[in-house]
Length: 399
Image 1 (cartoon, rainbow, N blue to C red):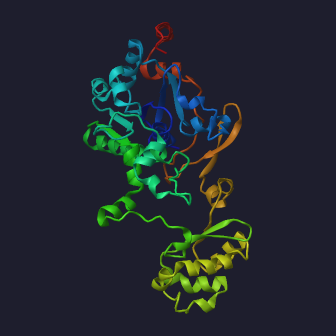
Image 2: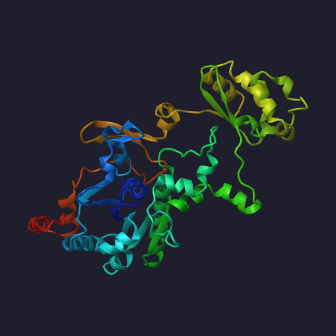
Image 3: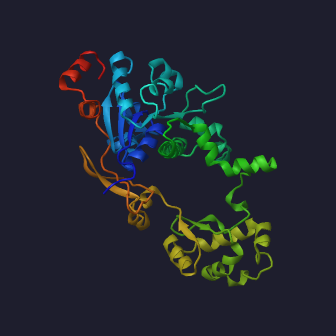
């Protein structure tokens, strides 16, 4: 079945997570993504532990490099750069997250590559944006979370700001970079014009915290950091259950749901209690009501409560661990987790594709490429090199 990006070729000169995530999302939708690695390889290949936990089957590299073809290309050599220029002539998009000064030094910057392909889209996954005093400084996920303001909203009970795991800034940056590339492809389809695309860690995390930042811009008030017992809406909160698990109530229209919640919890006497009978009343004494709800929810297991709340039309969900997410029937029914063949381990489970298209769906087809797995294949297929040409490139240490 055709996929939406069939026929689009993307050169992926990226490392670590932000840039590779963007190209993986596009590869999932059918783009021919050619991952270009220098002879030393993407540093993500060499990770043995993350947070002290062993990296099994190098899930880190595999997660953001699936569905790609991989080649080795030494851009520090003139012969290697000439190969890249030939590839650029035959490609639609070039993606990098190396600092702009490195691209300029090696002759793979935007102004150089467009000489070989004026319609090329040059996508840059930067740290701090294309302008300003820090535009060419290095950055990693944690720095993006910290400088964007996001980390200031995650202060724990110890008063220390905490990061959000899983590379949130990198993932957000990758999603938005893929979005930017798609916009540029659409614009080129209509106008025939290629262009530069820049998406940064800083900008991506500003976007993720847009509502909180807009609150400050509109009112000069910083987002309040309050504990769960002081949240003004007790129906927008989490509660511990008898089996030491947590469930989440997620209702903003509290007056609509309050009567049914009282029935579900067996606290009908509180429905018309003047302390709690309206959203305004409940917001004036949240700690008092949360304490009452805490005592109720601790009397049954989470599954018992979820069943009962669902019967009363209450919006309640489990606070799931990833072990529970991996077996969630809703996750599985929508193929948010799928199987793919690993070259050594056989069939393994991987995260699926969240965007569903009815007639041209994407697909997780292959695991990440082995180091240099497709070098000869790509150079012969895309550039028209012969085996003799490839042998000469090897002699020149270009590949």
